[in-house]
Amino acid sequence: MKKIILNIVTCFVLLLGSASCSYLDIVPDDTATLDDAFKNENTAEAFVYSCYGYIPNFLDYKNSNYSWLTSDEFVGSYHFALTYWPNLRMQQGLYSTTDPVIDYWRNLYQGIRQCYTFLNRIDNVVPVSMPQGQFDERKRIWKAEVRFLIAYFHYLILQNYGPVCLVKEEIPLNGSGDDFYLKRSPYDACVEQIATWFDEAMQDLPTTVSSADYGRATKIAAQALKSRMYLFAASPLFNGNSEFYADFKNKDGEPLISQSFDKEKWKKAMEETQKAIDMAEGEGYGLYQYKSERSLSDFDQAVANTRYTMLDKWNKELLWGYSGTKEGIADIYYQTVTTQNGFRDGAMPPYGGYGPTLRAVEMFYSKKGIPAEDDPDFDWENRFKIADGDSTIQLHRNREPRFYACIGFDRGQYEINSDTVTLYMKYGEKNGCKNLNSDHLYSGYAVKKGIHPDNKATNTTFSIETYPYPIIRLAELYLNYVESYAEYTGKLDGKALDYFNAIRKKAGIPDFNTAFGNATGEKLIEIIHRERMIEFIFEGHWLYDLKRWKKAEDFFRPDADGMRGLNSVGATNEEFYKDIHLVGRPFVFSRKQYLHPINNVDVTVNHNLVQNPGW
Image (tube, rainbow, N blue to C red):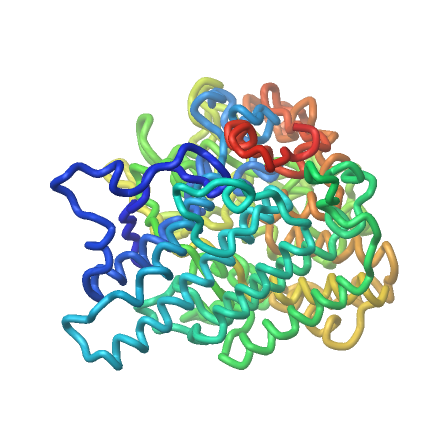
């Protein structure tokens, strides 16, 4: 997807009430006017790209991504300062209505306005280099794309803030009254309106696009996002949550979150997900399978399946991805700060400053495809001990293939420079901490998922193999259906069982019945939740899922005194392999954080806008 941001309306007019201004108020006399943006088909298409430009830069975990590196999956280097690393402030709950740290609300409402600007002016465009009929067809698709973006931007606000202000048309910059100062709509009304917008866009969107247009909107992307939205709507945070939100109302007393549980919302989520699955599979999408030039064992095949699902560009599992901004070594983006250091001299990238927590490491199953702590053949109590004749602790042995695809550990394998090397991560060793005030993996672990094995890190060079950020992939639809079906019926069979087992087959672990018997009820839901957390670990899902399940407070509470890791300043086995709470790296979560705060400026200006509870 091309990344061209025209910034036609740079003055922030939230539609919700800040000082009015117009494009002509903010451009010098000798610069282009808004009319110039629609003078022909080429400038009009550039305006479409400018609408796409408001999609958050998902590769920029510092400023644009709420979930990547902000849950307790990752912990940053001991010396990283809160002032420079916003994600650390998110982890420690150090944000507020005056400084929300990440502010989707403002940027996305700007994007919505940009979209309506396009829709209200595109019909005035006269083509100059193509026949009118060809232009009309292209214009029809552009309009559908922009309608998709209006839906998607509202959806992102809904996902992060809860009930949104629904903007159904371009609001005049000199407007006033309640048509200008919009109030928030009830959550369920938001879901239905956004779904309607997605449906309207789908009428004219292509089902798929050619490789030159990967990243642009499609019918499949729209339906897949609807699946996720209805899943959230059925989840405990928003489905009859009188425990948290009995008093969450507009100023006129209108409730914003439903107060009574509706089981049928799970059925709706299941139905919308099935539509998305059928649409995707009908176009040839499927779970990713790594193709190797050499024969692989079943175990190595499963490891490669997980390792390359994110890295193999635009593979058949990726339904929609973000590639609007390419990650470069000058950017403090994901691979730059997480790729293991020790392969170059000096303070040069890769920095190796963020690694998995012990919480994330322990989340993976044993090789039996069940929690290692429940596996009678896995010596959980002695997991930090080294077996006779071995070089690393028992926690790192006999785990499922996804563990080895995602986690780099001391004396374990790590892929870089198109080669496989051994990591030496104790204090003072090649890949370990040299001193606490330098870049290092504070937890004693390296992340491998999302790190390309062909990244180059030598004394003379560092280069990154880029790939699109996976906004949504087919595996998510499978697990959306599984969760909805289990919540609705209390069991797992039929298509839901097939989808669940397909995920586990790809992962190289035993099927559901072999691993768990005929689990039902709450036990079944716990199994499904953990499967989802493992499958999507390090992809930005944990925080959202834990919130919608209403599990976040309990889940993060053990990390309040410091997320867990090994002792990175340990030089011996006895010193290094210790389960410790990492000083200076707590994870703080309270009830108000289930919904992100709206910037207080916006609440102050718009007399109809209510703040999220607790803020």
